[in-house]
Image 1 (cartoon, rainbow, N blue to C red):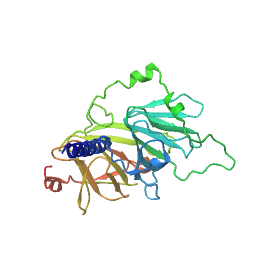
Image 2: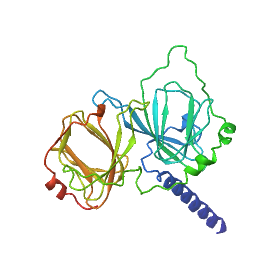
Image 3: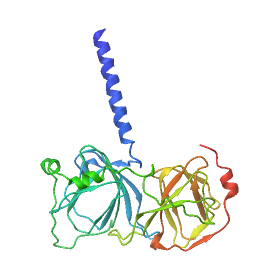
Image 4: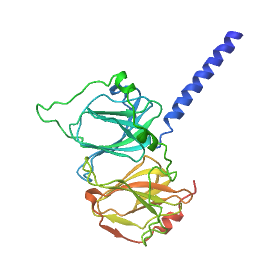
Length: 303
């Protein structure tokens, strides 16, 4: 009897450990994507959000998630911009001091520069990477490569000033900072709040990333963009609809691709605030505005 009790106790403990591990992985604000740990030390996931194409002309954009103590080797690639999303990360160029990456921090990595990146020992780390996927090194170019040793990783120290900066609390519960002053426009039924996640110029050659926070019940008019628009949902629950198409529910990690000239609207759920990143290809802000989607919005069920 005792052996059976011990067996079931161990099984319950194992299941609890697995469930806790899975729960920890889901604490990151954006979906993890596929496991790519074979290329790294530790456990790392990649979620491909934007694939570079001829319609939107926006660089490849992925979410990379490092579990605590996970990191890459020394490597090079095309010009890249890294944006901290959650947790604490490390970036180090070969021959330079390591940099601590916090949520909202932007790191610019020139093409061909040897570096490594990952999470600190006691925190997971999630980041956007925006980069030139098609870059190829010049013939004969040399750069340091190879694994980052455990000794190298364990010896990393940050200055007291940098460490202190990580203790600063965010001013709101949203993923990125936005201006506390509301933005009022006749093209929105209520004020929204704006911020900027990525500015120009940047190494990746990306258009600006504008952060838009919609209080619950807030939405915009039907409208179209001359060069199209890409939206990355980051917080809360929202909706998007193309004229004549089905209503799409948006949650963190969802991506909307609205082609050039296509009429659409987007905004927060009736009972939830919502935020997204808006990317306008070629930084073209030519927009045609129409009526509000009053009937369509009224038909949205409460969550």
